[in-house]
Image (cartoon, rainbow, N blue to C red; front, side):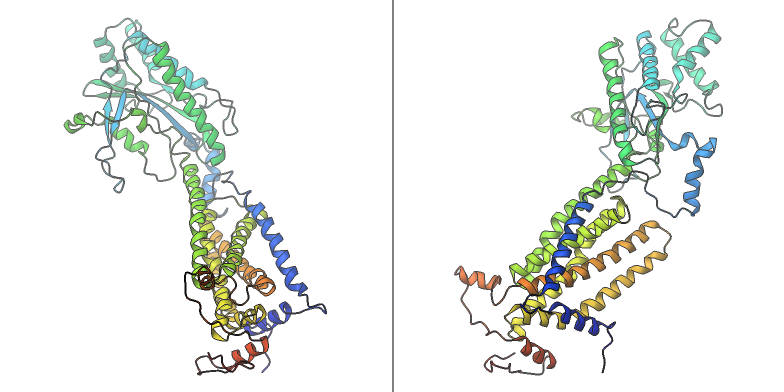
Length: 546
């Protein structure tokens, strides 16, 4: 019966005939060329994969024609969504700390924390008012020359809400005197009236509840709200330097208040948050506002006194907007850590399965080339970044790449036990004929299963489909084109590289008798015999039994 070249059996026959082809000098040039070509490509892939970096723009989760993608692209075209597309910068004075002693990281939605206010906070003194106004000016005019900033500023023009400025104007128009001329009682009484009867100029339908923190008739906190020039949906690489500038702004505010302003109330704790489109375990803005509005509970007064500086609990203003940066940075670290763990574990598994150090070394090099080829193809051909899908796939690739090489390597080693094959040519043919068809069929089914992910809506799954197909393709290519070809050319013969033989040579195990070598012709005859049919005498070595 004629075997089709497209069938697994036809592929295996053609592969063996091509790889074992020799010139008159006995040189297998095709096998040598295959190993060299795939080695060169593996080195190229290593260089390409090293160029992978975190995304330079917000990662896209839906196709361009999806309603969600269209909505994001149209946000900037409407005034109602303009401010919301920029990160919120909020500075709060009067908070001393946050008691999170009852917080359970495994139940993040409960007991988010109790606010601890600074009992020395007093906004009435002239020096305190001037310092607050200076902070407003500093925030408005803070310079930012990074790519993600606009107008050369960190904060967008006309977005800073400084309630004290509006309060002073209202106070003068109402009482014909400045806020510096009234007593503390008058100051806070009039501030309460201002809070209840007016609204911010920038938000006529809003109120001052989050800017002027009155709790039980006392001013517990005061807030400065503004919008950064950095967009929320911005590249993580762009956000990184801006986050450092925002840190510098906070440091400047604290330094100015403690060194240059001789007022009594302190800036012990500066808390600021931003809008987020992603869930996180950090304190979201809405929870923070609720915490600010809560009165101290009796249990809160007994908070531990040995807590570190309240700065430990600060939330950065850009923290939620750069949450994706931290997530992807963690994924990259996880990718490196995963590879650092998976590759040695894969090598140990190969040692256990093949029992041969040389075969395992060849296999782990092949696996390394597969991983590099998959990630390198993402960069060189698809121009992808090292996003979430690529970071996850980087570890998955190792597991899929091990599959084919471990089967072929195990069968190469097993040839000596099953048919007594000791030379590399006989072992190579036995491994390919015994396991090649299975590996070929497995590659088709695994790649075929990944193809169904192309029909999903989420781009993450279509990316995973591409990565799975790439992984199977390169795993199959390197298993047959690099790993097995290398074993044919320079594979271990006899007991060379065997763990048992090494232990015996070191005197750690009793020596055993080894099988006599057999030829490739005997391998073909042995392969033709049914496995498990009993004892099969090998030609030229009647004393060796299976």
